[in-house]
Length: 490
Image (cartoon, rainbow, N blue to C red; front, side, top):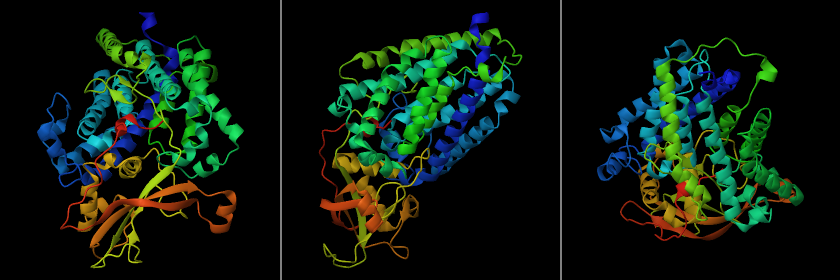
């Protein structure tokens, strides 16, 4: 049937598929480089310990059947190779069914990783990548007319990402309604980027305009995605530009880039490219499969829609173990004060609280030394750095992994040290490790010129007392804050 296909979106599909393949590549490379210290056999939260207590039906994964670090490395590398093949357009050179399998394989592999990743994979963009990747299986190659229903489902996903983020803000922190949240956000966000300091020091009226524009983009424009062209394209382009603004102002893993890819899938490029090339009509079995997937997604959308309409809306939640249809959102509340945990070690036999022998470990992304300018890492995801930000919000976020992290520093574990930028004990591990909580604030223009420091920090309290291998010491176990997966950022 003619209505089943939308040939004008052939270029939008191509751009979307290549962008998604690039995100897959970043995700699998990050998994391969970080997994041993985080969830490996000797990791802080080992996969075998998780699969021993969580059944397959709750967390379907290939690693439920068998796990080893070597098998995980093979899975991550296979996923990365699939992403490279898709980025190069290999799916277009295969029969339709084989191309679909090539898109299905990285989805299955990443699902297997996320479902055993525990705290380290409890972020909203994990589910977003899985939901997007599942729909991409049914988009077809470049020489086949794009199926209209799958394009509609991609818009439906983009709608929930943006509208969910807008609603959680309006229902949450009052500063969003007062247009004042950006007075704090750029300073207190999880991982500032190299321009975040400058964004923070923009005039307050500019911050008010930013917040108002954000509300319009997230609460009004999503509805225009389902209107005729060129209105839908204009709305999608504005969303993409807004996401680029977020890319410049912070590090949010691949969330913004994947949202941009979704927005571009809704753009009709025909005014720029002219008439579409000759495209083949899809076979009947493919059409039936698309109908079935559309029906499945619409049925599974019931709980996410109910969540959107609820006054007790939750963000970044999955309602099925396959992460097929999820809820999204971010920054329902914005912190006014930034706290950071400094992890220090000493090789002194008797550590003194204020002794000069304490040396600080350096992290890649999270603020540490006041004079070090924040770096740009997104779309790469520094999982330990992100969880250190959550732990600074409340010690409860550190439950289960922080003690193991300290233990591995005391052991001089090579895989754990690879997650850090600077190890102050290159020759032998320290005898004691401690953690201290500091309040961080951006310096002013005058302070930056005078000292060269981007941050000013003030000691608040002890987070973890001096600890050695013969003792067990855990941070306090209390909190009424949401889980990290509910606080992932957009």
